[in-house]
Image (cartoon, rainbow, N blue to C red; front, side, top):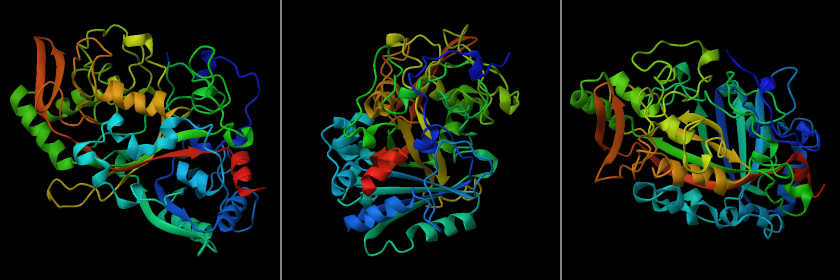
Length: 452
C-alpha cells in the first residue's frame, strides 16, 4: 500500500516554519524544463545590494526570489540566489560562524569528494578556480522564451556593478532522462512541513533541520549552528553547485562489453549498475525484466527481504547513495539525504553519430544543511568507498566512481541465481567540470545582505 507523509511521523519543529522565508528549491522542485545559472562577480557593493533588494521587495519588472510558499498559479519562471564564501565576504558578511568546509571551498576540498585526475580543479571551467565568482543566480523556466525574458529582466541595469563571468544553460531531455538514458529525479526527500516533492514513498519525512539551519536536524538532539547574525543564517541552506560531464560513448561501450562477457542484455546490465531500469522501475521490484510500473509506484519500495542483494545489487548506484533500510555502518541509511535540483546540458546523444566531440552532462545544486554530513559524506563514504556495507570492499559507485577500486579499473559485484558475478574494468563515466560551495540564504538573509 502506498503511504503518504501524513502516515509517518517526524520530530516536530518547536516553531512553525515560515515558507515565505525559505528559498523554494531547498524544499521542493519546480518541474520546469529549462534552467540557466548565471555566475556573477560583484564589482560594486552598492550595485549588488540594490539588485538583491530588488529581488525580494517586489520591484516592478524584476524577477522575485521564489519561496517555498505553495503556488496558486504556476509562474513562467523562478529565481533563486546563492553566494560563495568569497561573495559573502565581498558584501561585508563575517565568515566566522560558517563551517570550515564552506569557507575552504570546493577547490580546496576537491580530493575529499573524488575530484581528482580528469576531475581535478586544474581541468575545470576557469570561473570555478579563479577569484571573483561571488553570486549564483539560478533561473528555472517553462520555456526557452520564458528563460530569456527572465534573464533580461533580472540583469537589466546591473552593469557595470555586476559582471557575468559565465552561464550554464540546462534543458530537460525527452522522456525526462539523463544522457545515459535513465529517467531522473524520481526520489527526493520530503522535508517537513513542505508538501511531498514527488511520487509517494514509505520513507521517513526528513526533519526541517536536515535542510534548513536553525531547526532540529536528522541527528538526535542536534541542530546545525546558525551563522551570525541569525537574520543571515536562519532558514538558510548550503549546496554544492556542480557541472558534471557524462561520457555516453564510454557508457555505451561498457554496456556492450559487459553484456558480451556476462550474456546479460545491455538493458539488464544498465539496470544492475543503477538499481533501476532505465524507465525508472526499481530493480528490487522487477529483478528480471522491466515491468514499467506507474509513476506513483516508482519510489515506494525498500530493501527488506533483499539483504544479500539478490534482487538489487548492494553496490548499485541508487542503493549506495540512498541505502534506505539496508544494513550500513552506523545505521545511517536515512541520515544523509540530499535534495538534488539538476537538469541536463548539451545536445541529446545520437547513437548513430557517436564520438561527436560534444560535451553533455548534468548541472545542478545538491542541497542540505551540512556540506560535510550530506554531500561530502555521500561522495567520500558511499560513492567512493565500500566499507559502509557488507560485501562491497573498496569498490566504488559504478556510475559516479573514478574508474578505480579493487584493481586498475572499477569493479562491480552482484549476485545471480547461480552465485556471484563481477563486472570489471569499469571506466570513469562522470567527470567534474566545475564545483562551487554556495550558501542559499532565506529571504530575510537576502534582505540583510542588501542592507534592508
